[in-house]
Image 1 (tube, rainbow, N blue to C red):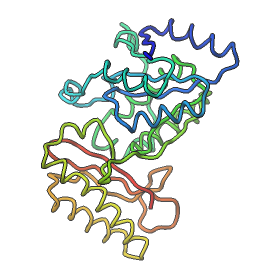
Image 2 (image 1 turned 45 degrees about the horizontal axis):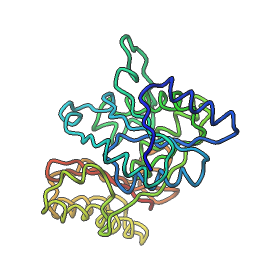
Image 3 (image 1 turned 135 degrees about the vertical axis):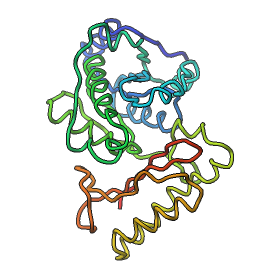
Image 4 (image 1 turned 120 degrees about the vertical axis):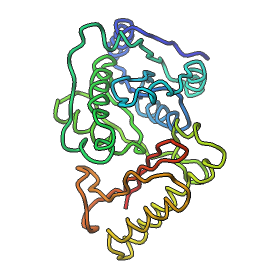
Length: 280
């Protein structure tokens, strides 16, 4: 089975209108391609929850604050299409950049508050790019439900806020992080790790789990975080951008476990920036 690939919004909307006229629900899985099992799990969730499924593949230039990062991002459309065919999605929407951002494009979407700390502080403009392209993809696909991985927890909260604030008629479905057998969160970036780096990488998740267990056992939050960050660096990571306890929804700093909490981290290994998060 092959999957239909569309590149123009007009063609996609014609298809979606036909589905909706037949009373069918439509799910969308927004991606930047270079798909792995984490993405496929989102596509399967969409298949289980919707009559029709669109997977979008678009390497969004507006969410890269580093041009080199954009250039290095893997583009593997043929392989991605073959993987999605095994899941049975209905269509891949893979627009060209000028279809998403035509000449004269002058509108941006910015979600304040939840986008400011953590990734927002380290990657200025990143979440403006995410919010803008996600809002456009929702309009282009006219989807009833959209599926996002919890691995990008802050992104998930930004999208939830976007949809709530703008009354967008799409339900956001968060799906659990998919991990390798050794605990490393699946990411397209993992392919850029060296052989030795790949062996070190699971240490980030391991130390986060230890910190969470320590906090649950009554160790002061600041002490547990400090010890975990030191352990991550000692394991061989070059730098720890942050390892922080935040409220699960608003991402406000927490100094004690007195509500739903998320432990979020970003660290660099082999020049590759890895992020992860777990519930505490």
